[in-house]
Length: 191
Image 1 (cartoon, rainbow, N blue to C red):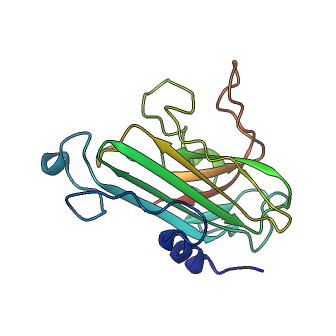
Image 2: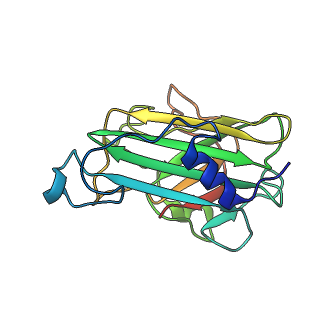
C-alpha cells in the first residue's frame, strides 16, 4: 500500500509512522532562531523534506531508477534544541529487502548527485556516527523502512544540513572507507 508523501509527513509528525515523539523544547517556536535569542548550543531548529522521487524536481530527485523505482517516496525531519538533535527518515516504495545508506549532506539537492556536497558534520573532518547523521534503512517486503538517530550536539541556525541523500549500499562504519555508502541514488532537499 502506497501512502502519499504528504501523509508520511503527517504520520511522522504525529508519531504514528514509527519515529519517536518530537523533542520537547522550551523557548521559541520550532524554526531556526538566532543564537542571540537562545545561545550557540541552544538554537531551536526544525527542518524537513518530503516527496515522491522524480527525475527532475530537485526537492525530491531520483538519480538511479533501478534502485529508486517510480513511485518511491520519503520523508525526513531534523529537530534540534537544548544542545541535542534528532533526525528521522521514513521511506516507501524502494526495493524490498534491501539496505540503503542515508546521510544528511551539507547542501541542497541538485540535478547531479554531487551537488549535495559532502556529509554534514558536527566536527569537520571527523567521519563517524557521532559527527555525521547516518540513517541507514533496511526495507521490508514492500520497500518501506524507517530510521532515527540522536546526537548529543545541537544545530545552529547559521550552519545547517541542506539535504538527505540515499546511497546504493549500507554505510561503512570503520576503517579507511568509513562513512562511504556507494553511489548517490536519491536526494531530498531540506527546508
